[in-house]
Image (cartoon, rainbow, N blue to C red; front, side, top):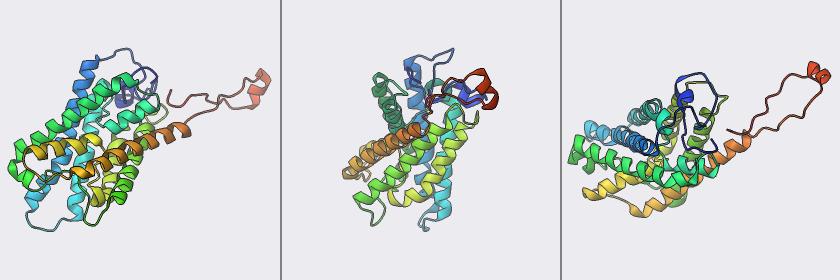
Length: 284
């Protein structure tokens, strides 16, 4: 994807053909405004379903202690939202729905920098809309129980929180880059990424709520502030820095691991004794 910004194209989402990866140009291209609208809607759905599952769980559970089963259901909500959106809008915008992934794509030259501001703005706007939808559906009770706003766990300091978010986002980016690589199994990128999100949330959520997404971090914070909720703005820089650094590190490492050396030209006689080798550039 040297000259476009899609994360997933139609081939990665719905067919076994792997002619391109991370949004290599296809025969039909959606307009930039269409892609931004898709990113906004996709991020809104992610926040509404994923983040919304947190206050929904707390409201239903009442004063009962929070359990691992509840964490599992919240993780599943995030995972299913991601899977659904990958297959719904992956062929439109790439379904990045995460500014950290967008920046990782730009840093690894899989997306032009000129498209980054629009994507990030659409994703943050979508996150705010998704959080507003949570309040619209669940009412003020959602704000009273925290609105799913990302915050450090009890006894967790800035250093631990930074490490947790960086590790979680690193794994997410690594999975995303690998799942949509052209040699990966066709049609399963959405499942791989969604299940990756599910797995990441389980160990990271107790430390930081497992945001692993700057838009998911910022959207509920803005909405919570508007409705008088508790927002730890001093924690925001730690989340944003850790998520961006983690995603870039994951993307860069994947590209480094996937860079292939082109084979030297052989003679016909040599070809009879040597199996054909694939000469492919990293995610090219």
